[in-house]
Length: 419
Ligand SMILES: *Cc1c(COP(=O)(O)O)cnc(C)c1O
Image 1 (cartoon, helix red, strand yellow):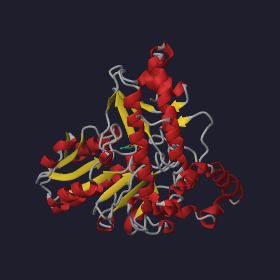
Image 2: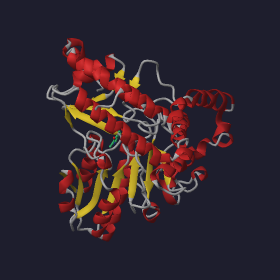
Image 3: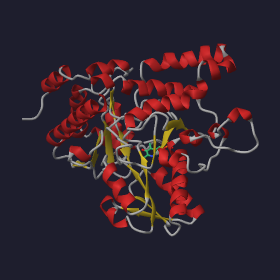
Image 4: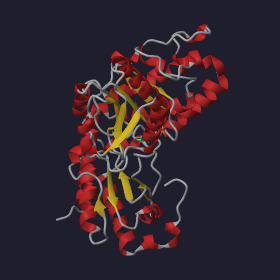
C-alpha cells in the first residue's frame, strides 16, 4: 500500500517540528524543494535588514560599527554556526565566499604538511566534487607545484599514502547527496600523515556535523543554502585550534590583523580563527545570515539537528517511495543512495532525456527543484519548512507532468542561464 495524502496529513499533525514553518515566508502556491540551493527567506529577515539599513546605517551611520556591534558580526554569527557543526565558541568566523575560504584553508593545510613532510605533493579530491572546489584546488596545485588527483569515492582509501598532502572533500555530494563518513576518513587520512579539508556546503544545517568529534583539520561552508542566509550570503571558515594560529592565511587583510585600528604598516595576525578574516565584513548580508541561522537554532529546544535529521529522512524516504510507485514506467532512476544513512537532505533522479525540461514543467506548476547537468533532477527537503503533504503534492504534480507529457513542450526545453 502506498502512502496516501491522508497519511501525510496525519504525519504532519504529529510532527514535533511543524511550528517551525511559521518562521518562514513561503510564497502561496509554491512547494519549495530547493532549499539546498537557496534557502527560503525567514519572516524575521526583511524587518531586521530594514532596521540595519534605516536605523543602524541611515540614522547612526559610522557609530554603528561600535554601537550596533557591526565589527563583531563575523564572530557573533560564527559562534552560532559553530553550534550547528560541532565547533567551539571562538573557533569559526563568517567571511567571504566558500570559494575564497577554500583557497585560504587549502593553502594553510598545504603549508602545514609542507613544513612537516615536504615530499608530499598530492592533493586528492573527488571527481564529482562541486566544480568551484576543484577549480580552486587546480589553481593552487598549478601555482604551488602540487598534483591534483581526482578519484571516485571508493578509490579514496587507496590514495591515502605517503605522497598525500591534503585530502579535500565535500561531506555531502551536491549532485547525488551521498554522505562521506567524516570521522572515519579524517582518521584514515591522519594515519597516512595527511590533513583533511571538509566542505560543509550541503551539511551545515542539513545533517548533524561534529567537527571536533571527528578531529577534523579545516572546514568551510555556505550561508545561503540550508542556513537560509539569502542570495550570496557570506560563507564560514573553521580551523582546528591546533592549526588556526600556525600560519598566516594567504589573504592577510586588515580584518585578520591583531589590531586593525592601530594601522601599522606591518601585518601581525590575530590569534586563532580571526586571522582568517580578510576585509571589511558585509554587514547587511551578515544581518540577514544571522536571521537564517536563528531559524536553525530555534529547532534546538525541539531536538535540534537530530530531530531535523529524523524528519529529513522521513521526507526523503517518502519522496522516493511515492516517485518510485507513482511515476513508474517513465524511465526515472534513483541517483541518490537508497540507504538513508548515507544520503543527505536531498533526492536525485536521473532521466535519459536529461531531465531539464521535467524540472521546468514542475516549476511551472509551482514545484521548485533544480536540474544539475548532465542528467539529474534534484530535490532538496528542508525539514524546517517542508511538510509530508508538500512531498505528496509535489509527487502528484510530477505524475501529471509525466503522464500528460507536459515536459515535451518547447517552452520547457529552453535553457536559462542558471539551472
Ligand atoms: C554551493 C557550493 C559552493 C558555492 O561556492 P561559492 O563560493 O559560494 O560560489 C561551493 N562548494 C560546494 C560543495 C557547494 O555546494
